[in-house]
Amino acid sequence: MSQGRVPVCGEVSWKGLEPSNLLYVCSCGHVDDYDPLLVESRRQYLETEREAGLEIVVAHVGGRPLGFAEIVPLETAARDVGGDHAVLLHCVNVFERGRGLGRALVTEVSRRAAAQGRGVVVDACSHVWGFMPEEFFLRLGFDVAEDRGRRRLMHRSLPPDARQPYYLEPRYDPPPAAGGQVLVDVFFTPLCSGRLSEEAAVIRRAAASYGDRVLVREWDASDPVIRKRFGIARAIFVNGLMRPNDDTIALDEAAALIVDALTRPASTQPVWDDSISRLF
Ligand SMILES: CC(C)(COP(=O)(O)OP(=O)(O)OC[C@H]1O[C@@H](n2cnc3c(N)ncnc32)[C@H](O)[C@@H]1OP(=O)(O)O)[C@@H](O)C(=O)NCCC(=O)NCCS
Image (cartoon, helix red, strand yellow):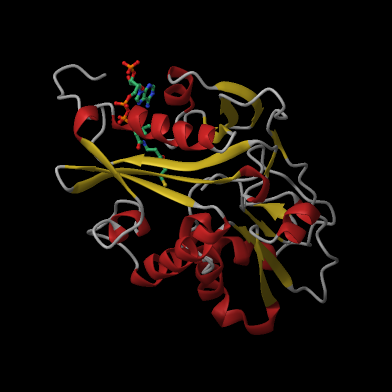
């Protein structure tokens, strides 16, 4: 616990997705700076997936939402992770940090998972700007099952009959380039921003002036057939080269990747970045 801060745990009330926290959860806390289309897309996805077991756990303190967590059954999670008898803690996000709210959220999630005979699995990060930090989960008693680049697949309280979680084996064969065309394959998970792929939209904007010379395809990791075929949840391949960057793609980067691809022969073998595939 950070020194000098007031612990918050005793005052928390737990809520699901509801009008008082909808914007907060759907904008991931960016209530003053969000894209309404993406927020609506995420809202629709979260609402729909509740029937398939997606659960939003929001911590309200003094009537205000100050943190939330999202869990989905691991077997059907739109991520490149396998395993069973667990929920995937897709994200935990605390607005006022260092007051015990992160721990309280994970404890609440574990309690709900245990009630279903499940443990908790999280795809954490090692030193990626404090994004889902491995150190936090180690502190809370998670163990590392596997690592992949900067990603750490961690688990806690798995029942004895559960398999250890594992990363799916990524497979991607760039199709042969047709007549100098640039092919961009965007893999995305709707868990973050719904079925509107923000990154595919950015790439389409960057490619607009090239007409048919650039083809952009989208692959939705919530489709089990796509997960089985590719084992990839988030990645961008431009003529076979995986974009080696964790951050969400910006317009100038997308434009530079397309210009580069137009001036070199397409790769016949995929070139992987070590972080396969990206977490965000
Ligand atoms: C990680 C996070 C959840 C921690 O929340 P928090 O409320 O500040 O954590 P707590 O106060 O409950 O801390 C619990 C324990 O973890 C430790 N801890 C917290 N953050 C830590 C970190 N980044 N690294 C190491 N330890 C950490 C605390 O020191 C505390 O230890 P103690 O209780 O044994 O003394 C919060 O920083 C966060 O939301 N980060 C962003 C996560 C993210 O990327 N979400 C996805 C966004 S799309």
